[in-house]
Amino acid sequence: MPRRLEFAFLGCHSSYLASVTWVNQSNCPCESPTIKCHGLPSDFERKYREFSRNRYISNVRGHDCFTFLGHWTKETTKGFTDTSAHILAEIDALEVVKTVNKENNHPHRNGELLLSLGPAPGSYFVDAYRLRVYCWENLPKDLNFILQRHVNRNKYGTIHDVAINATAGWVMQLHKGKSYEWGGELPEELERALKRGQERKATIKNLYLNHQNKDDYILVFTDGHVYVSLHKDFEIPMRKLIESTFPSTFSSGPFSWIFKPVKVTWNFTPSCACGKDQQRLENAKFYNQRGQFHLRKGNLEKALICMRAAHDFGSTNTRYRDDYYMTLVAVRSRDPTPEENITRFDSNNAFHNEFAFWKDRIGRIELLEERMRIVLNDAQQRELPNEWVYDENDNGTVFHVELPSDEIQMPIFELEHPEHLGARSSSNLTDPSKQVIMVWR
Image (cartoon, rainbow, N blue to C red; front, side, top):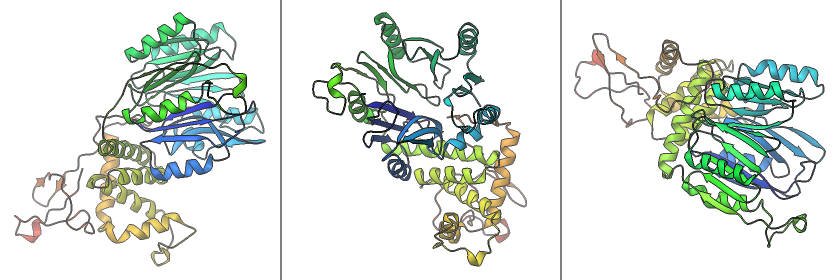
């Protein structure tokens, strides 16, 4: 068999995970995969490469690199990525599907699903292939109608895949990509490519849309016509990967002699041209929103993972630093370990190491605890959704400072001494009773 492409959008802004692997008919890898990433945390890349060295990882779908469903095969064994449980637990409506899937297919597990995510809170399409049923929730109205009509007229097994972008544009593949329908708001170039594909009676080989970004897509036809819209810096790596999945005159590999050469026609439209600094700022904002979401749901450990990523991406931004410290303190409040037993050299407890490293810089814990109360109260007042949805216009909570006699809203600035987080005396206030407590947004 030719090399197989796997691709996943793991974020709202140019965060890509792509790989190509030789696999046999049992989906077992015949070689280590070629992996290319863009805009993802370096620690994630390292761990993913290590995990996939002798495994074939497929059907990766998720909101970010810490929360995605993924299947893997290795020789005679198979399983799911550790992150699969996170994405299944995050979508409330999936609880029934995964429970029934597990109970009716013993010893199969609840992760045996093919998942597609949508742009609305809690929206998804699931192919529960062990149950032989399709399930979906909160999808665009026109797609919902098409799916319902198709299920009423046809037996299970004809829907191959459903992909949805951030503006409710969608593509539904039938009969393993031999036919397809689309609707909603799709990029014009993608719509033209789909129409031309239908005219040529071409089969879709690979199709990926980003449910958190309207401009990203990958469309690959079996006849070699390729249409890609990604960050400009990822064009060359992506082109090499896709071209390696087509047999050519110079192909090499265990099955290369079986297949006729296919000429690849490459069409690339940059969806973004921002530099690395802007990419880091966008990622920091995204992961901070993810952290706020997990805080609202009471998932402190997951919130800490996202707040840590936001802080790493946007380390010069005081707001992300404060939110990271705030979440560290919240997780620590649930930890019964005495203070004297927490050290940064505890090989059995990564959180203790992390907290011990930062605790001298955190400063006044009561200010961070108050910050947490403000964040949660603000989310409740704004009636933010209980299911995840990225809002690029949401800049988070605006913090106001209440003094004994008046109220002042201060601008963002960098601390001269980060160890004194959250407090500083204003130079134009001589009265110590009117010390200004700074809380940033």
